[in-house]
Image (cartoon, rainbow, N blue to C red; front, side, top):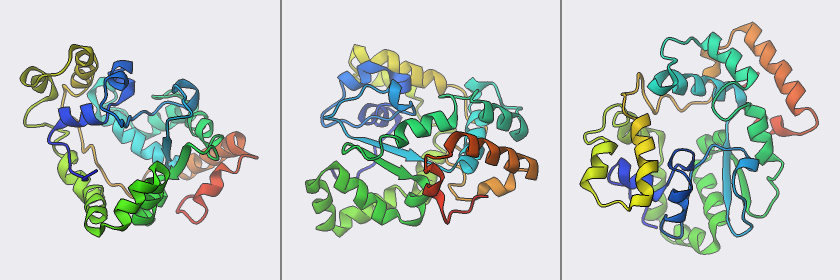
Length: 258
């Protein structure tokens, strides 16, 4: 664990496979110990008591705004002329990637006390980055967190490399038009055949340039620039319907949301 950045998109895809696009083969052939990325709800993720699951959620208001820009800016969605008002309706109905926001979040929230599940909010990461990084390290293993506690330079490198400014610099612009597209990298480097299909799925998704920044604002409270009073009221109604009795919204006490 040296906190070094991957040198390009291909190395990132091999080191941290996005299972939703790269498929099961990416998990089978990933180097061990392995880390995987997914946006799937709990019931669609193969569960193992020997694996550790870190689920990161964001308040529904800012999530809706961020998801709108993601959908509008990525050409495969064919939503480049879509408005926030249109997306808001789709979001409330669950007619977006991965279905209804609350179905997804609650599926993992219900398992938050499992010893191999760590439930984290985006807002925690923003306001207490170092503390949250150490919490994640502790969850992964005592040897990992001890290494960070005993090596401040390593911890600082992780904080620097995962900062919003660093992410925007390295991935915000390169995601628009990488110097060497992923599809070409596949022909340049030796990648085992079992992984080719999944990587080509990623390459196909990224074939057309983004219409905006991949790493956009990264702030809490951007919902204020988008939600109308009527939309705030409707979101509150959905929140009450979907979360009453769950305690979910207590995660965002003190956070800048209605």
